Length: 452
Ligand code: PFF
Image (cartoon, rainbow, N blue to C red):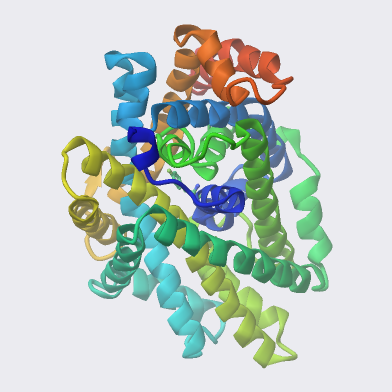
């Protein structure tokens, strides 16, 4: 009875697009290029893809198994499948959700400002001007906060419309638009004179530049980008129907996510090299360098540069929105189901908490740099702790749970949809989850701390 009452995504396409909508976001378009730039280019990309293939896909299937079996929010699903103690993974996930939501909505808000600035033609000027614009905006005491509030309210409104009408509808519309926009900008970027240097930066690895931190950064990026290790996909899978092929869905989502990340790289690096912008300029890569890139790249036809800039920031906003919706949903569904309050009220509490934390994150970057913990701004700390620690640890524990504690027939039953699918990859999946994933993640941590 309970299962039929629970909300479901309405269609197969809806499931893929909503889940891919969660995966594809600032992580692909904003974070992936700057992490690649800071970690040496092609070698990082290769390690990243190895992490996606060997570690992230099995973790994703595991989260799908737990969520669809559990038919509940992340905390309850972990408890149902593993017993009381394993609830902790879900609790960690909800905490991670709040932390990511907070800094994620800050950057999402910047996208709104940059759409406005592009429309108003305020980003046109020499590189120094664009840098000054960014710094002045980020350190303004109220402007980023206003954008943050608007963005969180947009997210809130979609969330309260519920799973099928809100999340699924929004994703169905936004994902194809996003893809088409991206292809257009990549084509423009790759046609610039000198673009080939950016392309070889992305595809020719320099193994000399691989330091010990690169592995954990790549692992963290894979988990962040695929929304793994924090109960997000557990929550979404609880809305999947019984016919969904979990393996196929996870491979499709990993492919879409990887494709978008590569396209984002192909959009940024060729253009950055063409106009002489350093690829390792960090989180500001998108916001400081791209306006210059657009202007210089299309100098001959300013109207094109104007339209491309608006398109780009609109694209980033759409991508951020579908991801923030999924982060918000992890926390909302938890409060709604566990505190027995209405979905509406749960969503209000989540939005309010994220607003407070988001304001602190935003101020820590600009107007009040003294908002620091452990020598990092709150913004950097939340980003670092979630992607480098909480998410990989969540993934590690999830694999331990499915590999060693949940009876194998239960996993097989979900994997094969109750025996209706052949499930020829189950043995490989189970081997990866039982041995390869936990050992590899542990190894990467030990390597990071210099133990190995
Ligand atoms: N995967 C999203 C991105 O790449 O932008 C970020 C994210 C969304 C992380 C949802 C975690 C999550 F639960």
